[in-house]
Image 1 (cartoon, helix red, strand yellow):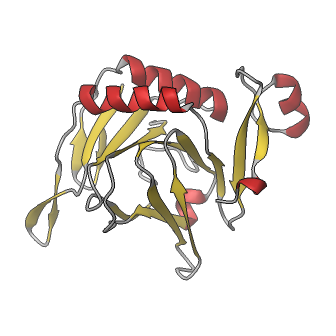
Image 2 (image 1 turned 180 degrees about the vertical axis):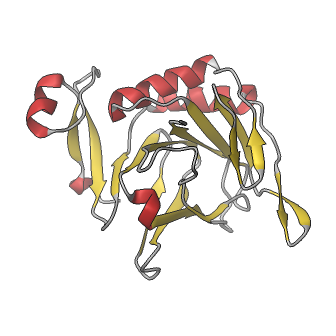
Length: 222
C-alpha cells in the first residue's frame, strides 16, 4: 500500500458537514485513510486505527480470553475442520455454512474495540465474528459476507491484530479483476455499499513462517 496516497479522514462534525465524511470525536480529530479505487465497491483502509501499544494489548488479551472454537463443515459428505479458529460475540445467534454460533456476552476489550470502530465508521454494530489464524496454513477461502442475516449493502468493519497477512479481492463478474493488500497490526478495513455483492475476498495460505493473527469483523444483524 502506497502511503503517499493516504488522506486524512476528518472526524470533527464541522469537517464532516462540508466533506460528507463521517463525524465522530477522536483524539487529533483525524485518522489516516485510503479509499480503494475499485469498481462496484466502497472500501476504505485505515492503517493505524490503534497505536502499537493498544494493538499489542488487545491482541494479547483476546488471544487468551476469547472462547475460541474449532468448527467443522461438511464437504462431500465428510466433516472437515475449518483451517482457523473462530468465535462469535453479540446479542443474536449467527449461522453461516451450516455453523451456528449462539449469542455470547461481550468481553470488555471487545466493547472498547467496537466503540472505536463505531466512532470512525459512524455505524452501529451489534455483533462480531473473530477468526484466529494460528500459522500460515490457516486461511479463509473466497467468499462474500452477504448472508440474509445482514441488511442489503450492510457495512462490514474488519480489524486486524497480530501478524500481517495478505487480503485478496476479486470481482464476481470479472474474476480477472483482482487486487490485494497486506493488513497490518491495528488496521481497519471498512467495506460498504455493493462491495459484498460484487466482490469476493479471501486470506490465502502462505508458506512463510508467520505468527498468529486475529481478525475481527463487526456486523449489524437484523
